[in-house]
Length: 210
Image (cartoon, rainbow, N blue to C red; front, top):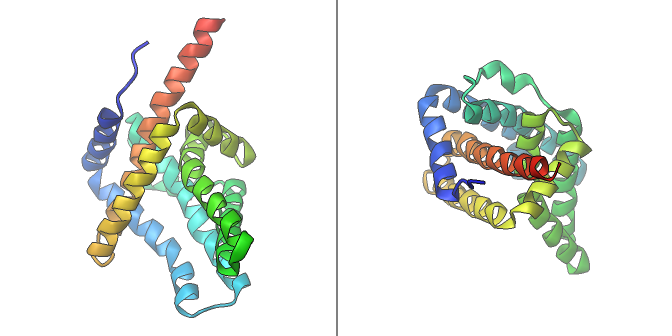
């Protein structure tokens, strides 16, 4: 069984974005637009319930972006219409997780420690859950379970992806937000290439045992 290397998969994700750069930029603008309510709520020091509600639009947008990225990685010719193919159940789970983590961190003490651990779990599992759901047609808890299995199967890749996310965040900050339209679809495309490789390995292992 031939295992794809992580650098090759990262390169494949970058190349996939480059070949569809105009559509990727449009998808990135879509994601940024969905984040506007949350940014406004944070800047306005809105009450906690409003902050929680403001996480829902960006969570919904991420599920649509994951479908776009999955098609991108598969070479199926991603269409911007895919951005409307959202998973409300998974989006609500993501929004709830982010909100609970934020409230816990703001509370301090033991709640902050629990929130830190929860946020770490979100960073590791949810990127794979988003793309797994898009690739395999799974929704809500099924997609979340699939993402957790992929992280458990190859945790080093999940940690590397989180590291790439931090680097992307620094790039966005250094560019005063300009690179945000590129970073979001790029990270999801890399996640999709990783997920395809992991699913291929798992399917091959399961097939060899039958």
